[in-house]
Length: 69
Image (cartoon, rainbow, N blue to C red):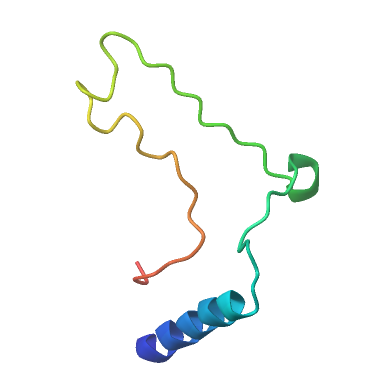
């Protein structure tokens, strides 16, 4: 099942490339999506990426679950 899902996703991406689409994702305004989130981080002398390795963790958005966890 996992292999067929992977192949289907690969086919979808390749089909989009063949059609000549330049963008896979487009930006949607907050008013339309209903999601208003901003991950604003202000580095300080004692809180920065060099001293605190996990400073920027949580700055992304999950789109899918790859490994079913």
